Image (cartoon, rainbow, N blue to C red; front, top):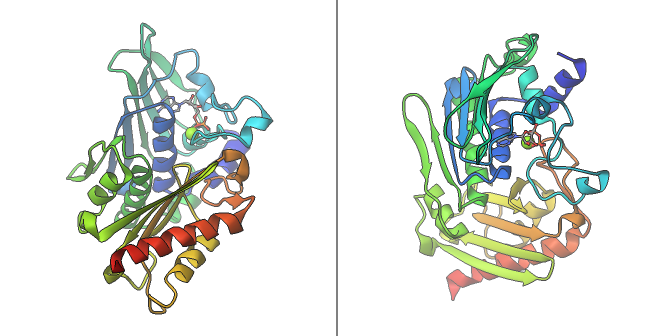
Length: 323
Ligand code: ADP
Ligand code: MG
């Protein structure tokens, strides 16, 4: 295992939930319409993700595990324009450097399927395999070869709750994809494909009624805001229900929380928080998502304009309840 891969692993693979995030993004990039996740012991013992996406051709498979090998960027220019989830070509290499990995994949058409197995420190083994179209990746022995990282893992139930939040964040932004999350003991999430964000939102939060959510859509050329605001009677003391998505990716931005608070100013008491889900679609050239390897932090070229629109959408969403 090269030092470089281990360093990359430290950035990309913090914990089981980061593996689940990277693998789910790969499945979505591969055009999957159905993804199933099974984790045991919070993902510390095993993570298995199956999709019905494009699969990987046998000749491309070894390359997929080489750092900075990505089928998704062709030039430096592309780095700033990419719309796919993955674009760094680091995830599989990083994950394989800190865990045992077992992958079966079958592309569409006549091409052969493959079974690929790797253990840190030895040569990977690849052979022909047959099965349904798509890819299944099984990760085990996480951080066995990096005991210091193993020590930073929390309890299985804590790691599991991180996985569950990760799956929900991704599922919220991809309502047209069927997701399931299970442990060997029980089915935890089962989200059927829906044709709207609203449909997925009420599946994810069965405790909310559809009419407790107002939907505001603001279309503005290369920027659109699709906002959902939860009835102010459901305010809470934390920001658990405040989520920002940019081009279908859950992101963090301090100005988002400020915009929501200022939209509620005067109507909502201090120290309590509205439920707000904002889905932004923005020309990828106007945003830098490469600030952080896990792509959660973003920088906008015109943050003031964007968060003024977010604020307006939230204000209209609150007003919809008093009308
Ligand atoms: P990136 O997603 O940034 O390209 P990854 O290391 O996550 O890098 O994946 C490497 C490559 O492996 C991808 O570019 C893709 O070609 C292939 N790949 C990974 N997972 C899947 C999958 N579930 N279905 C099809 N192809 C996949
Ligand atoms: Mg990827």
